[in-house]
Image (cartoon, rainbow, N blue to C red; front, top):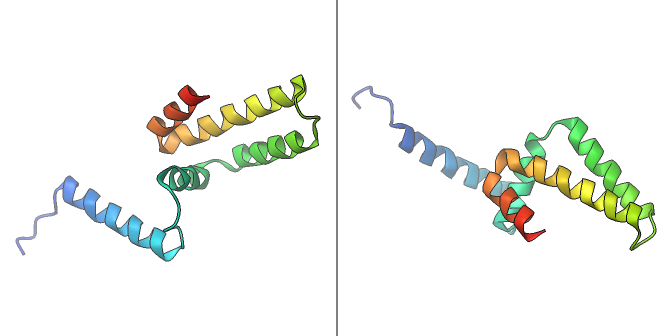
Length: 100
């Protein structure tokens, strides 16, 4: 070995391989790419945002279906999900925003 460090590309490939290996170990093998991206995004999200997301989900379950307050709650929840997703997977967040 020459003592040189591997190139950034090689290090990135090794890191990606390690991430895939750990995901398999953790039982995430059956998840789709968007599900994995969402899980990663939640892991990176601040606790305040996760608490707000949980609060909005709980609130939406208590509201009358097909009403303006419920629509506003769901829109707020969706916007928060997009903001959380954007940090780890900007392309996927943009895709969901377009589909909404």
